[in-house]
Length: 74
Image (cartoon, rainbow, N blue to C red; front, side):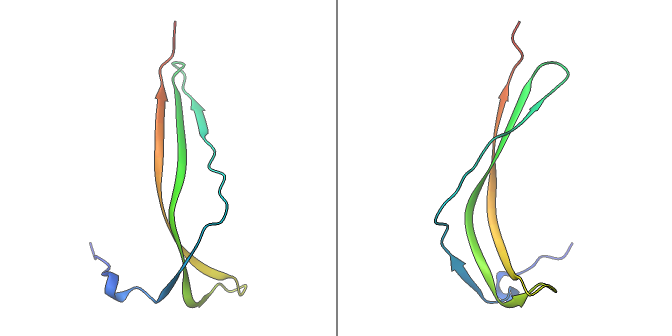
């Protein structure tokens, strides 16, 4: 496995998040348990000088997942 060093990442510019809506995704299992998952954005950076083939900017997003398990009752 090759590790990518922070030193070889392209230059990036941090972009402030001015609004967020972080909703839960819910999954009901056959045994009645409900799994809930919500992504939380930690940071967003624009990759300087990089664009997609459609001339859209390229972003690096750092996030984490918050999970919740609700056992079936009854």
